[in-house]
Each structure stands twice: as structure tokens, then as C-alpha cells.
Length: 171
Image (cartoon, rainbow, N blue to C red):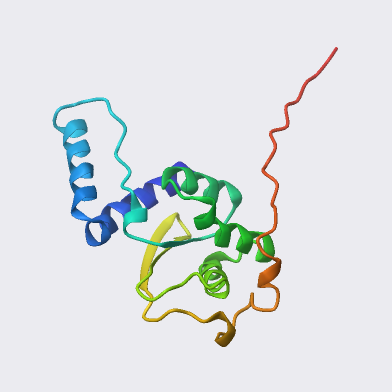
């Protein structure tokens, strides 16, 4: 997970200045100066990417990756729903999961004109790539072909959390 985290950090550092509002860039810069120049022991500032994007499509390679990104990017259940339902229905489909996630949001009627979507994909050797989309029109689900359209009303479904199994050996 640490290597994937470093790849994502590099990706975010490159993408951030291109998409984040100046206020978030300033907060990031101040925290960086405090840590590097002033040697203050503070956590790195993670920008609030929800100011830049309405939708997130993250490579649904596994539940642990999604849980970690949900926590670190402060995403809501609404943001995570397309990701979790894609993982539930299709499993780990590698980079194509991004298309299924976007199709889910379209089939639910969530994509509106002007909405911005951030797609984050992880590749072999822990590469990380981003794609940014801006909707040119509001998507009408009834007029679109989608792998979800025949059963979209059945989603979301409840996916139970991963339970920690404590092993206890009684002698």
C-alpha cells in the first residue's frame, strides 16, 4: 500500500496546481513550507479535492484501496457508491472499472452539464494516472447505452464491511 500511496502522492502533486482553487494551493504551500523549511512536525496537508470535482472514479482494484482513498480524500458515501457498486457487480476489472463507475453515475442521472470527474487509475509497477473530464451536457440515462441500465434501479445494494477476525486460542 505504501508504494501505491507514493505513486498517488506524486500524481496528486502534479495534478493539484492544475485543478485546485488558489485557496487550496495556498494551504498546501503553507503546510509544505512549515514542514520543510521551518521543520515543524505537522501532517502533510491533503487538499480538499471536492472543491475541484463533483465525481470520482477510482480504479476498483480492491476494497482496501477504496477504503484508504475514501478516508484520505474525505469522500462521502455518495462519492463512493459508483466505485463500490462496480467492485460488487463486476469485481476487479482493472482499468475498465473506471468506465463502469462513470457509466453508473450516468445511469443514475448524476452527471450534469459542467460537472467535473476525476478518474484515478493504478497500473503495473504502482503507476498512477489521472484523467479529468468535464461534462458538456447533462446525461439523460434513458437515452444512453449502459452496462447498468437494465438493473440500475436495484442499486445501491448493501455491501457488508470487512470484519476483523480475532483469533483466540484458549488452552
